[in-house]
Image 1 (tube, rainbow, N blue to C red):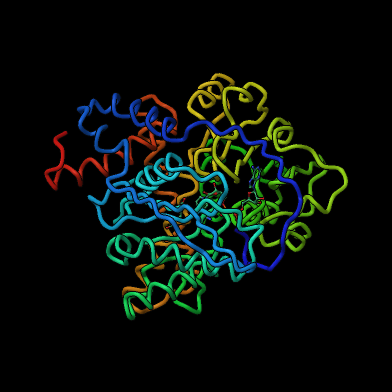
Image 2 (cartoon, rainbow, N blue to C red; image 1 turned 90 degrees about the horizontal axis):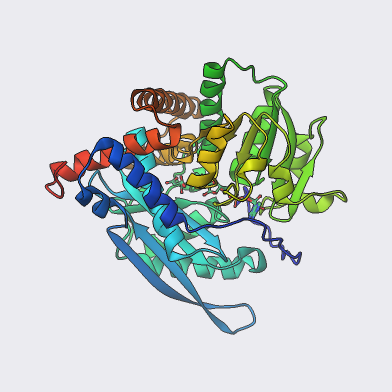
Length: 432
Ligand SMILES: NC(=O)C1=CN([C@@H]2O[C@H](COP(=O)(O)OP(=O)(O)OC[C@H]3O[C@@H](n4cnc5c(N)ncnc54)[C@H](O)[C@@H]3O)[C@@H](O)[C@H]2O)C=CC1
Ligand SMILES: O=C(O)CCC(=O)C(=O)O
């Protein structure tokens, strides 16, 4: 969710254009391909294909009209061999158990790739925060924490923001947790406001990480960033900040979109204006008369296409029509395995989510470290450490992709799986 929540009820009709395949099946299929290359026994696949723990809860919330609504929530903890589990919480009408399980698995991969002392987790609540008041959202956030409090905590499982959640929601969740556990460590949750122990640089960390990854890719491809034509799907926390960084470096952002549709201008869009004009849910296209659909936007010609909204956006149904040189996966799971194969045949490079968008969890880790030591870093320190981790992870995955002659997606899984398999073996859970 974008930076702050304002109390606005978005009455516009949402155009559901995403083509959502089953993300858990997606996770399994690439997991299997990577395991086959590693020649790991089936027991490793059996261990990693589903989370070790999955909790489904019902959250009764008193609504402003005095009725009680029961919300469905989930928390999946994929693997805690390496350390506590870690991952965001999504508020969305389409959240499903399969999606949360896949997202938790992807979090494990990210933590393995970047060498964080965590396994993956993810949470979700089936709700439409755009139609709820601030008070209803606060009661829902607090209710969720009460419902999952037994299985989370600063040394067990550490939540963070994801789609349609933000630092204010993290603050309410922290406050509720501190009621339940008296005063526990603020490291129970990350992505908090800086005034409550949040890290400088967390708000923009995912976008910064994407920028550092893209810069490495462009270096390899010998492409200057200036005047590159870029399209970004999704203009929330991740998409909008990335757009601004690229715009400031001289790239031409020719298209952006939000849940209502897209805008496109081959002369380039005024990103600072769009940033100032978007609402707290990352919606800005409602201010324009001439819009196109999200699917049309994805199919426009550009150099770099950045899906930064939801999963399952580029599939076998539209991959043939994608016209770019690089797909930079900012969202989790935006490109299906079948689509990646089609894009590869078209010589389009797919930079995988579990590498490219790991800046968020990296700075969340920095936030947790700062909370644990009670000593806080400058934005510059955070940024330098983030850049170093992003670049090292990219180099490692590039190396593995060359070694095994495979694409970056499978290479990223290989690195993530190896890290998890090593700690799981050391604990005596599996034998590789
Ligand atoms: N926030 C973070 O730190 C991280 C986020 N991600 C991933 O990045 C993606 C975006 O997350 P945030 O920017 O944080 O979310 P956000 O809630 O701030 O923004 C979401 C954006 O996507 C748009 N959107 C929603 N549904 C859409 C649809 N069907 N078609 C097109 N646009 C749609 C919204 O209008 C909004 O502009 C998600 O996939 C998330 O899991 C990944 C790593 C970390
Ligand atoms: O910051 C975190 O801990 C998790 C961020 C997240 O949910 C993600 O990378 O998908």
